[in-house]
Length: 242
Image (cartoon, rainbow, N blue to C red; front, side, top):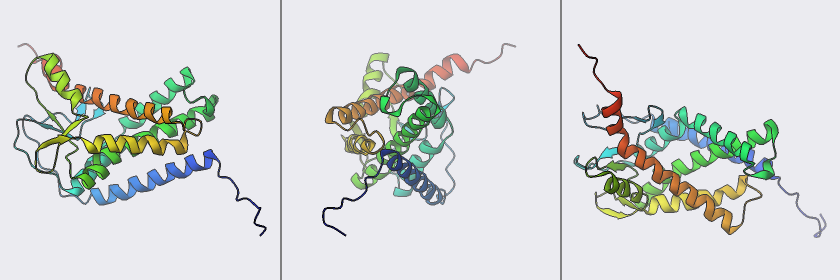
């Protein structure tokens, strides 16, 4: 082979498909491993609901007032698996893909069904990669707890600030509060991996935008987790009048 001959380039579409297949295989592997977890204990009476707004999965929440119990590595991967494979995630990914289609987000994907399929694949990959990195892989490596511990007391402003700040503050496996390195590093790595399936968005600014977008999404999610039990109890659990 002549030394001047170049190796064939790999197309972004092939890289995207390969990454999605890798995510699917990893999800299946994690699911088989995580499902070997012993039967889940019966939740406490004051445990947060398993879904926010009755739809969004809420498998990694606890109460701040409850005694702290560390999670095993298997349990951390179980949480990532449940959050990544629960059916509402795919509806949310479809909605985000549709919104991106209307606003022409990721213009390199084009329009039509092909463009929608690429946006849907990117959104699903964002969720799978982000969840496993921030809820399973990095918390295991850094010995941090991926759960959100709901305060459930105080005024609205203080609770909102507490909930949003938990993307930067977390408990470690000993129950001590520390910098949430798992959340930050997981989202940073996820943003970098996005360079594979967002071929036209590989600049530093694009990576920073993906990182901050995911951090803001996680902060908003935790605010919902903080207040949803109160909203549900006050507005949705009315007893019928005799």
